[in-house]
Length: 208
Image (tube, rainbow, N blue to C red):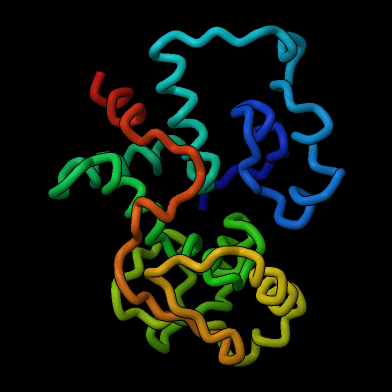
């Protein structure tokens, strides 16, 4: 299973905004973006000047990094979104939100999407009573996602649930923290995706 395993704080600096890729650390003074908000590299402090293509590329890279995808995975999601009815950009974001690792993060069973990916891959998550260890699994309305019985004492999962109280819950998700269970109540709503994402720029990039 291909994944990026290098440092991630440099991504926030590169995109010029917090992507919240390190859970608790992002809210402390240790956050790399708070200390050095300019892009990494010897030319990082120079004033950036992006062409139209550069703006589109940066937007694509930002969304890729938020959801923890590699280029080929992201491109496949775009082509799938393109074939669906509706607005391609919104379809893309909806598909990304419906990934199992993202849902596990949204429900509070993990502190970051990278951590959620690991929780799923290690077999801690059941969907509709069956173990699913594929982070890219697409959930549907009505699915029940829960932490398996013997994993409910894993300290990191318990801590993540406690810390998730300060995180806004999406309207399309319902969670029972006492039972370590969540339900997909509907489909992702674009207005609730609060990070400043301009999905139209991604559509324009891939439409070149």
